Length: 288
Image (tube, rainbow, N blue to C red; front, side, top):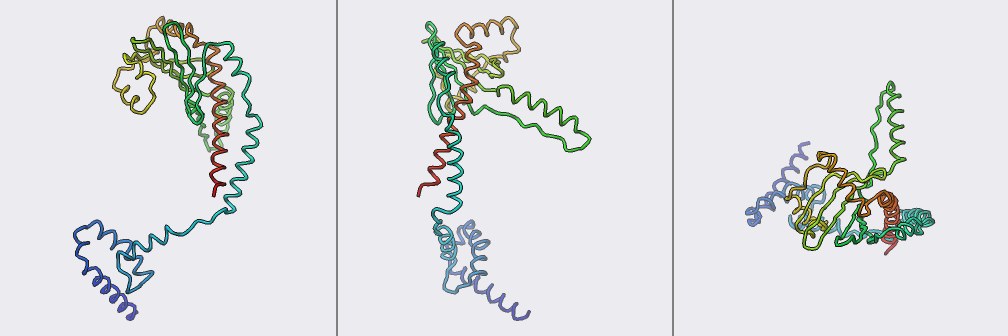
């Protein structure tokens, strides 16, 4: 025990001597703390070497950790790529474009603006001197999972929740939509709505003097819009006003046919992006 105490004192003295000759470190308390608290104690106690300075001990240890080459083509990589390939094969069996898209385009004046890898899809058309653009985002396809009670005496409540959950899954999931109606030089009306069960539920009707601000979905434009009055909550408007706004949209083709198409296309788009994701991830994992 006495011998161990002598060795500890010698080690402490050695550390103090090694630190004193470095006056530049004393001017930077943050660096001194970094070297004396964690790296120095680890290097000095686990890998003692009289020829290794404090700074070299820290950088050399970090370098060795980062320089260890990763093994190539590990079994985990192969197993993951194989599993992704199996999933990709199953998903591609039903990849062809469904008939409802062709039917909708042949019966409606809208065009589809769908860019691969982008969550947002737009339906566009011209109505007289107005440019109409309906944008929906597949990222808003959300379904909340209910929290189940754990008490055995609450089995009836569990059954009721399960019944509600089954009803929700049979219905279409809510999709956030933005409907912009623009007139040259006159600004734009922007409808913020939720599409649920084939019905557009309007939340706000906003007016923007700058039409570009209404249709720009960048973070900068979104920040700018927050400084403008968005209009009252739609449900607080007079009932007659609400009905007339709904008819205003229907007259421009934002009707039941469009709502059903958006619901179906959102699911199709999500599936298409999922297949693309599988391909990209599989390719990355298999690459050298």
